[in-house]
Structures are given as C-alpha cells and as structure tokens.
Length: 185
Image (cartoon, rainbow, N blue to C red):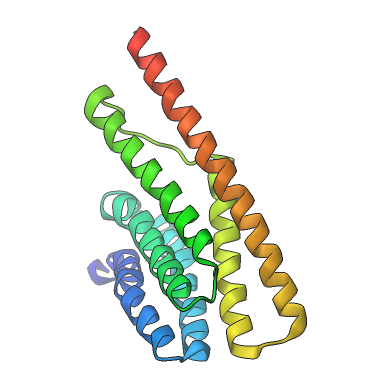
C-alpha cells in the first residue's frame, strides 16, 4: 500500500523525465513516436491527479511538481517545435515571454508582498488549452500531413496566440491589482 501511495508522484516524475526524451524524438525526426509519447504522457497528467485524490495523498510534492512537470513538458515541446520551425518562432517567443512575465511577477509579489497563492485565470487555462492543441495538431500534421490538419493547426495557432496575449495582459493587470490592494492594507 505504501508503494501505491507513491504512484501519483511517480507519474508526475515521469512527465519531468519525458520532456528531454520528447525533444530528442522530435530532433531525430521521429514525429510519430513523439506524438504517441506525448499522448501517453498526457494521460499520466490526468491519472496522477485522479490517483492522488483517490489514494488521499494530494498535496505536498504534487502541488509543486505537477504544474512544474506540465509547464516543463509544454515549454520543452514549444522550444523544440519552434527550433524545428514546426510552429512559428514568434509564437514560441510569445508563449515563453508570457510565462516569463508571470514567473517574474509571481516572484516579485512573493518577495515584496508575501503573496503565496496564485490561482490560474480562465484566460490562462484557455491559453494553456490552445497551446496544447497547437502542439498536438502540429505533431499530428508533422506525422500525417493531411490538408485539413493544416487548417486545424493554423486555427489552433490563431487561438493560441489570441489567448496567450489576452492572458498575459490579464495576469499583468491582476498582478498590478494585487500590488495596489496589498499596498493599501
């Protein structure tokens, strides 16, 4: 039973370990294997949260490392796909820039205002969803090269760019509001 309680953390760790492997597969031109691996690893994301709740071990390690594993995998895939020019570099820079601003803002709020909890916004969740769709559709298109997939990929790119920009602006606004609110207390 003790080993079973480690399952959620093992699954989270799998995503961290998988990130460089996914990059390597893509850099070696093995898009089919990368696509299958991304799908399998994505299932672990759902299953680690589910198993943590069912086993009553949610919290601790998972609270920090689950989002870290998700972001590591997404950033690794974005950087690799941008390097390979499978997604436009401007989208890579936009996504990484937004994440950098969020990270910097959260660190500054923690240091100077003592804020320890940052809840993701709806726009942030939509941004992540469309970024994931962009990655998946880019991998599917790189593997199967069907015309309708090209159109879906570009739709995902447009929506990803839109929500990445909107969520970045929203997070900046929320950070400024937090700073003002905390300063007045």
